[in-house]
Image (cartoon, rainbow, N blue to C red; front, side):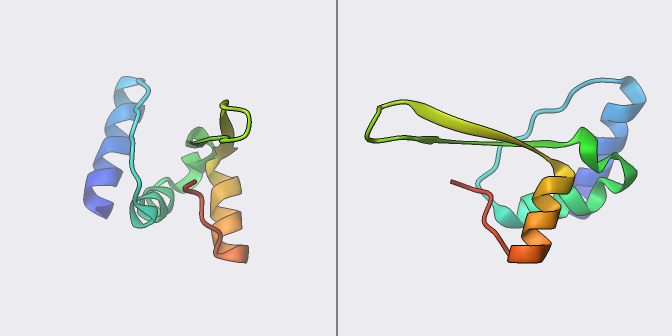
Length: 80
């Protein structure tokens, strides 16, 4: 995973494009954040879930640093 994510991050930087990844794997998120280096805050982790009571879809948008800090400090789950 590290080789693939490092390649994708570097390629996106070189050609100046946005890269969208979708996963349900916390291991993939951890590896991606680990490969980001100084560009960690260029990564956004967006989670969404359906609120059953209201029927609305709720979402949150976190920087890579916020997710990494939560994962390291609280071993928190970012998937919803």
